[in-house]
Picture 1 (cartoon, rainbow, N blue to C red):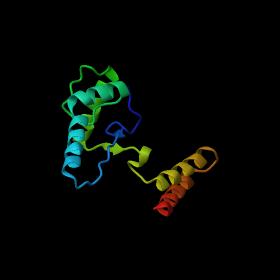
Picture 2: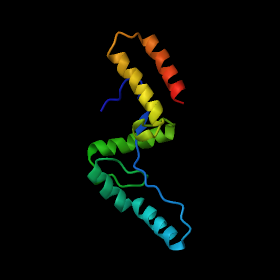
Picture 3: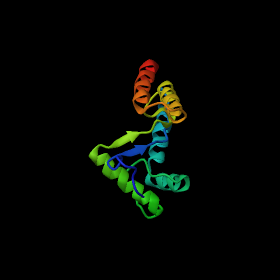
Picture 4: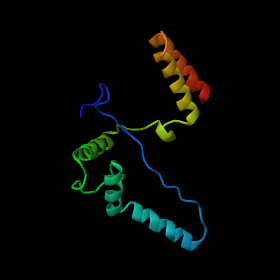
Length: 133
C-alpha cells in the first residue's frame, strides 16, 4: 500500500476502549483487574483482532495468524510509534470533541460543494474550530 502524499511519517489510529468504574469493593476491583489482564493477553488480542480485521493494541504479539495487511500495519504502527508520528482519529472523539468535529466537517462539506476558495475555507475552518471550542 502507498501512503497518501505527505502522510509517509504518520499513522492515523482508532482504539477500542473499555471503561472501568471507580469501585471500592475488593472483589469488584479484582474482577476489573482480571478483565483487563484477559483483554490484554496475547491470546485474546489474536482472536479479537484477527476476527475484527484490526491490529493488536499491544506489542509482543506474534504475526503468524494475521494477514499480510495486518502484518504491514503492525510494522507501520510500531515504526511510527517510535518516530512520534501516531495521530488519533477524529472518529469517535479520539482527537477532538463532537462539536469541533462537526464544525470542521461542515466547513469541509461547504468547501467541496461550492466555489469557496482554499483561503476562505482555511479562514472559515479556523473560525469554526475557535467557536466550537
